[in-house]
Length: 182
Image (tube, rainbow, N blue to C red):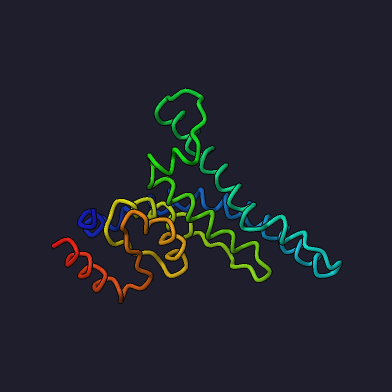
């Protein structure tokens, strides 16, 4: 794959656009949600309430994540495989499609940071990073950017994957994985 990229790098522009186009609409929606979250935080500060904390809690975010994973997997099965309208549970997706699960869950978990009192601005590269994260359960060493690495690692470690956040640490991680395999 890397050899193809090296020889055909000029053809990558359509691929990059293909991965970033869905991200643009997702980020537009996420930006609106970020604005609403900021308003909730401001209301809480003004009124002394905990509305933002209650509505955007880790447990509520996790419940939303379960639903999102289930809906996406069910829709993909129907559209791509012609499967019945049976709903695929998040647990089933986690077990049978770990790549899809890691990709969706890492992106959703990372984007929770856009709802904090001091939010991180979502980036167009977050979505392609999540697509890339779909490989993590199937490899020994996975390189991710510094922001996404902890979210991917939290999900991929159970598959024996080492997630590396810094390019400078990649060589050592590969050497450790090779030593374990030997």
